[in-house]
Length: 406
Image (tube, rainbow, N blue to C red; front, side):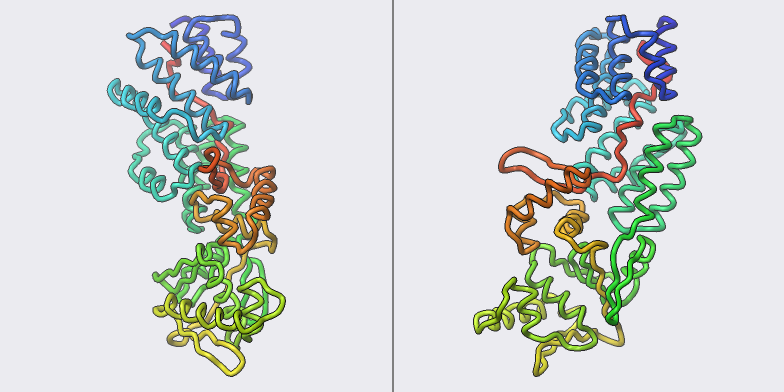
């Protein structure tokens, strides 16, 4: 390896893409093309970066499998930074097998973290959590340790686990400081701001107050009956009833929870659940059917009792009812609340869950996409929406190998 390639690799590891380009900008050999591609990715020109990395991968000979694998890994991370869910996962799997076969543990860990981050991008939280748990950290360099901690932070935040989120964030901050990479420190600081924003509003006893993530976690962990308007579910201890795809039943439950310990009038429940301005006999019949179905869903958590004016929610034992509402009342907040479960939703399914028109749901999604809070996946009829990852990871590119490209 010549001195210019070695110096450019060290500059990229330190987060200095301009310093790397000064050494290899005019070179066309495969190693220089790869380093130029990584530098362009760090500078934000992702299309040019992918072009250079593909040229480098094609230029490496059959005996240079490890260098080609590094190029494939770099291209996969550029695609992740560009939020392109259709990047070739088979190529990354091929690179990972090459790293394992050659004993390149650092780049193997880097490739596995890429796979987990892609799962988070696609909303596959369960898979990401299992893969993250199985990933042994070992003696990783500070930059990789920071990215792994950000992955754990993202998972904990999606799960509503405040204590784990704080621990993971502290690890990410410590590792990013040790790395000496300013862009990575900024990424960690940006992710940490999510912990300082209101996560929900608590409606109880006629009063409403904002809750931080720690307080939300405490409410959910209590033995009380919690009607979670952010995830559209009811829970008491370990028992959970999910109603995200049954909007009318969930609205009836919210009406009962908001009126607790009193009764909710039939007229109010009809107006809330069936999106009408005036109740008639048909709506009253639908209310009776809806209450029967809701009573069946909640049979292990609470009872619904009819009263002369309406219905009352009765918690088993001496428990209380607490209603968690989204932090802001708006169509966009309701969409974000549904996407918080990590799953990919179509606009039609979101409209059904929200009880609004598909066009209204699409307008909310476009507004949230422009604000960087949701991501679109797929094309045509397979178009789906997921919540944007908390940590962007686009500034922490790219390869951790100490020798660069041989």
